Length: 126
Image 1 (cartoon, one colour):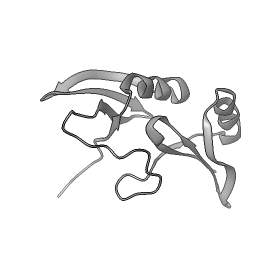
Image 2 (cartoon, rainbow, N blue to C red; image 1 turned 90 degrees about the vertical axis):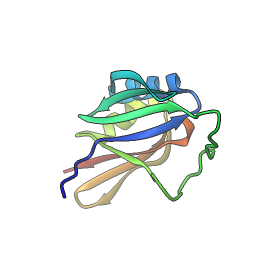
Image 3 (cartoon, rainbow, N blue to C red; image 1 turned 45 degrees about the vertical axis):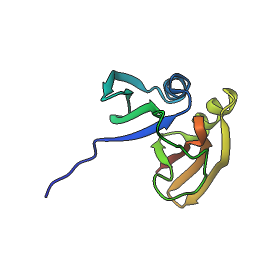
Image 4 (cartoon, rainbow, N blue to C red; image 1 turned 60 degrees about the vertical axis):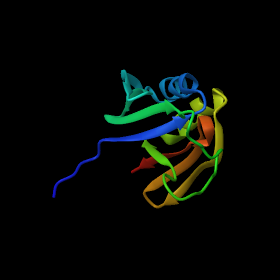
């Protein structure tokens, strides 16, 4: 068998707000807008990887911001200068749930909260 990563898909209470958050804070670029069945999807790339965002369907129940849960726990984005990026994000009012800290001798990390409680880990690996 042979598999490779394709995408991660998020359900959003406000899709446009979520798309703007990823564009403004991480330089995400919009790849496409399309519909699968009756579900509108906005596909975006961050660091060469694909992420999809869509609203919940009328027949779906979406749990509110669960924190740690079964399923997707968080996404992680890597940068070369975490201190500088953290300062930039803080100046924009982004909420940090874990401030920048040394995770191990070669890795700094932090966590922020995105729209709908999306947990985003920020990493610097030396």
